[in-house]
Image (cartoon, rainbow, N blue to C red; front, side, top):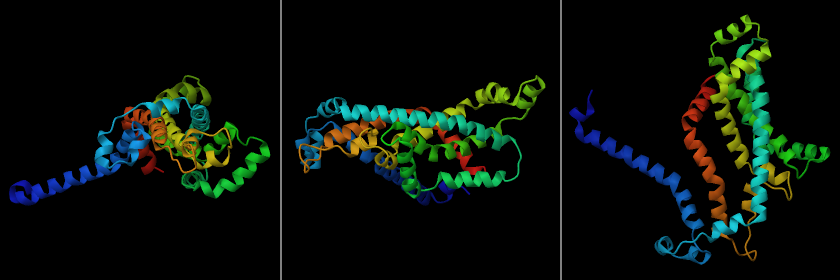
Length: 283
């Protein structure tokens, strides 16, 4: 039934309601980020103006200059890159091996292992915080990026295995059979045949795991004291006194660490959606 022809009033009301809802959701999602960008270019004295006066007040790059000249922020960026890249590299390596086994071979308890991996991936971080803290202190890596890499593996490896297993199942088995007929060993088949085919999935999974590590706060706050990552550094920003909150530099630092992630997500958005969908509907 063509609603536009039978009841045009109801049709246009539905279309109007749909676009109003889309505009409302877009405004709700983007307004905090847009306001943060405006704040990052504003002087501290202008932050207490009325919204209209605040928007037209003179803008400045001083907050960004102050952020990039801050040694703590520079160290935070470095430690964030080390921890996130290290955790993602280890996760991709071990996760791809596990995904190959779970996606290709049949063995007893395979389904239980998959459900266990899924359960671990949604486990709350606070539940393992105490035990991890004791373990990290006992092995002497407290306040070291190794502690963050080790702790981040708790959520990156299950996520990597779960998503990559779905991709491995979708790869035609004829590729492996042809390699085995040509005399390739299982490891040669994995590295020379399957890994090149899986490269888009590896990039997408690695990017999503990197974003999770980059934004992680609880482990970084607990397992480090001076060598902290950039989310903790931004959270601990302070002004000239305990009553002075430097919102301008805080917003500038937040924009600096957010923009690269937005660019990466926009570039790989199609692969990210397909990866999340494959991992969500297949078990």
